[in-house]
Length: 230
Image (cartoon, rainbow, N blue to C red; front, side, top):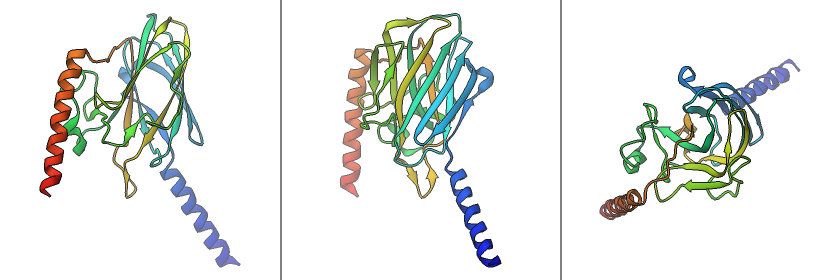
């Protein structure tokens, strides 16, 4: 009987350890310089509620860790704008750790707001806003949405137009997240950052899109040549 209890206790400890290893955790990145001064979150299954109180003009970055491989998460952001400045747009962008092979196809130079040690996310790294999963991408404050997941080799959602989120106002934002690049238990893309950029328009100019399209075509040609020579 004692042996059975010991085995059962050991199994419970292992189960708890496995569960804690895969626990989803969110933290404010560089909180001393963050425009977000009030932050909390809760996780229920694959739904993550994030509560943010913005009291400074600037950007806010949330660090994600522990997302399970190939799982679609629903993000619900409860945002309060107490900055004293009206918001006419709000952009969410994914930033993955710098130093992966996929970094070579990232548009250069990186935007000025990308912190050291991170890079913009591209369509080859497996990190996305749950691309193709059908999770709604909505905002109660903004009615227009610009999505960049393929052509510009970045992952961002830019909410704008329809209304202005004035100081003291709140917004409920909804979108998905997924990481398809966990290899042998190692989180290749994690921890990653969700960059949040009020009033920072990141939609590329038409001329930039043309140049980028040319660059992507060249990158694709190089990849095909490399495969052909293997």
